[in-house]
Image (cartoon, rainbow, N blue to C red):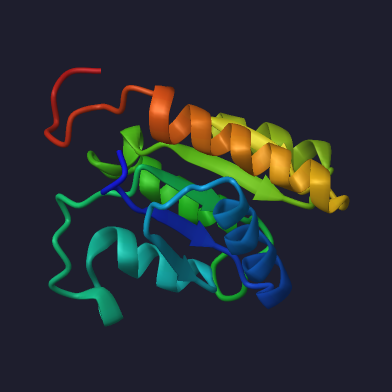
Length: 150
């Protein structure tokens, strides 16, 4: 899966730097596409706006999705993804600092594959990213790009 990208949806520049650094530390060489709000995430995923004409068969291996985003929040991004034939099977890991129970429940209700709290401690964050990379990029068998059956 080295050729598959990771979509990082994160509005905090410090968290973007930290995540990119953690991926590098873990020797995860996949291309990382970074978008900073929910509208940009949806444009990337659906090939609209600034990403019009993007090859939609090139789906990210995993979407790392923050919840607290400008313009369109992460829950709405997830809702719109799951309403689409291709997006309903897209692996999504909610990677957020929100400990709110309603955010956890809503994320899973909308089809998140995993909910991970951003650790404040850098070493814990590195380990979380390492495990994310190991599972989603090496071990997980993704659904085919076609519609197929559930």
